[in-house]
Length: 156
Image 1 (cartoon, rainbow, N blue to C red):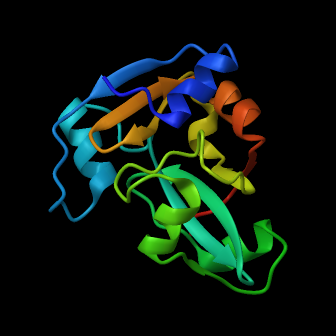
Image 2: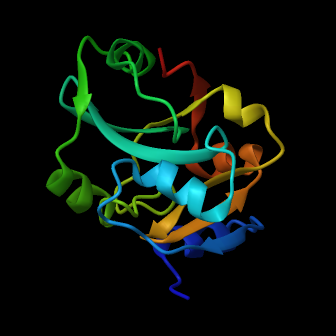
Image 3: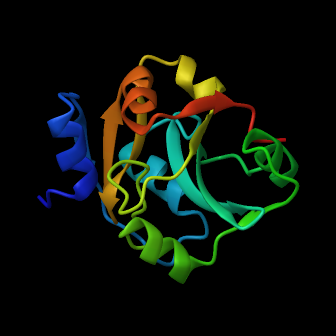
């Protein structure tokens, strides 16, 4: 199993995680939902990592795989006027991960990170570990602490 930068970061921080490999389907309409289904996990607790730009500044949003971002809310959370999805090639360069395997942990360049509030109330959530076909299970408090993330309403 690949020791991704995210897994190395979590290990160095003393965070215990569980690893959940699955068969990655690059043709899936919704990668996060496909991962949840493949592993038999609740889509509301299987989180996807989306890279955005707020007034041209990069940021990271982590939300349930069955939800969509509200760009208006994202802009407000990061103190900007306009938010948009980051182009895939730019997200890959910035994070060091490939689309479909982007993790909020161990990105090449640390950026402000916001998590949707609702799943962070659960005892455990599942987030990409930094490789296509690999999720990690983590306590939400650990995810927030390690990323320096904050909790907000990011979805409509």
